[in-house]
Length: 477
Image (cartoon, rainbow, N blue to C red):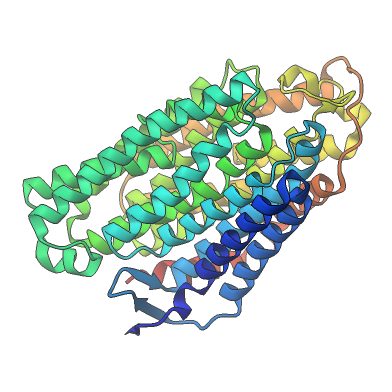
């Protein structure tokens, strides 16, 4: 049952992060760069407190801020996942920052502020709150993409992301203004009432622009062009963050908007979703084949995985949303494990990113090689690993909605994509060995271990995640 309450408590996690970030800005400004360690640890603590506030909070659905903010099962699930991803990204970044001597206190603060924006995006119940959350998150991401100011690649990545991000934000805002102009409403429930099951041409155009903005944020075709360059150019801890929490939050925002603001015009938005799902799956499968940089390969991989998740959304059903939630959860865990392995690719104190540098890892570090191989097999969707079940749920939802061609193309794309994942495994175990990597940091070991265990053991006990995803999907009504 939905309750409208004029209260701040539903937004407690956002308030914890925002007020904590403001306090840490003051500490950082007063103490300078010497405050990095304290600010970094405090930022991790803030993310943990926000996660705890959600986990221990009340259930049910609450709408506050005059209908602009909603706290329901879907929001709570996706917020916990986004906070956990941000927290892990921040923890694994410490070693990299120390070795490159870029221990600036602004970095963890920007991660916290970006995560605050993501939580607002996930809980946004009108177009204005959605845009505010999106911009708060994006502005922080633009800066951390380029925070290594003396590095040409990092600066280039930040500039590309900023220019293209500004364009996508403009398109999204134009779409929102068209929807407001033709419906006279910004709150999702009011938009549903104004449409009466029929969308005027202006609303369809507005929806198309809105979906274009969403497609950029989730790096879906044809708005994917920034992804490979930014993933490769940005510092690896930043890429780890980009590939997990923001993508998860943007997908949650997309699902909420189409399912709660436009449930009666499913046919119109479904065509857009099917198009970008097809494009993303096919491009992700074929474009990654020739890549030699592992971060660039994972960028194309992420484009493909967004396409698979959108297959579930195209169904327009609770089962489809459940598939999206399960898929994004498993994808996030797998991606964090993959980038933890990339952060472990360090030889004589220098980070390497070429896929061929993994040669002989199976002999030099059998445990890391096994974990990396398992992560690659999961991304390829090979049973009985978690990645197989992630694809199973979205494809089953598509088949139940009679999108047979979409499911078949998805399966074929997955087969093609398996080639470049298996190539990495082949390099790891069968190519001539190179010099061993430096020992892994304890934080990287922990992330790789947990990720591997989740991937490997999911098939034994999938119920907690699947049931939670089902409850999250049903709460959108």
